[in-house]
Length: 94
Image (cartoon, rainbow, N blue to C red; front, side, top):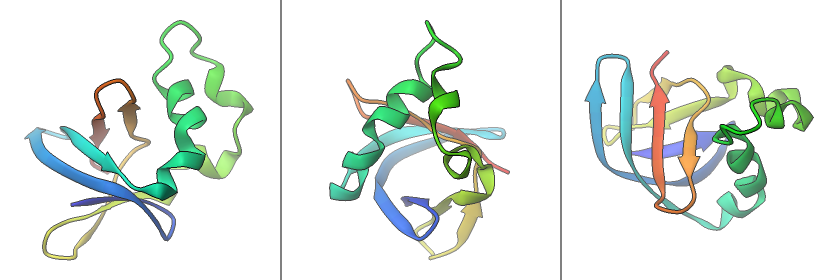
C-alpha cells in the first residue's frame, strides 16, 4: 500500500497491522517525502502539541490524506503520524 497527500505519493507502507480503526506499519519514504519532513516532525512532537499550527490548513485537512491499497483502492485516512527515527507510521481509517 502507498501513502498519498492529495495526488502525491509519499512512500510505500509495509507490514501494516490493523487494530480496529487504527493501522500501523513501516514506510519507505520516496523523494516526495523530503518536503514533508518538518511537517511530520511537528505532527508527532508530543512536547509541543501546537507545533502543527504553523503549517498550511491543506496539510491538516484529513480529506487530503489517503492510502492506495494493493488492489488500487483509495481509502481515506486521518492525518498520519510518521516517526522519522524508525519510519514507523500510524493512521486512523476514515
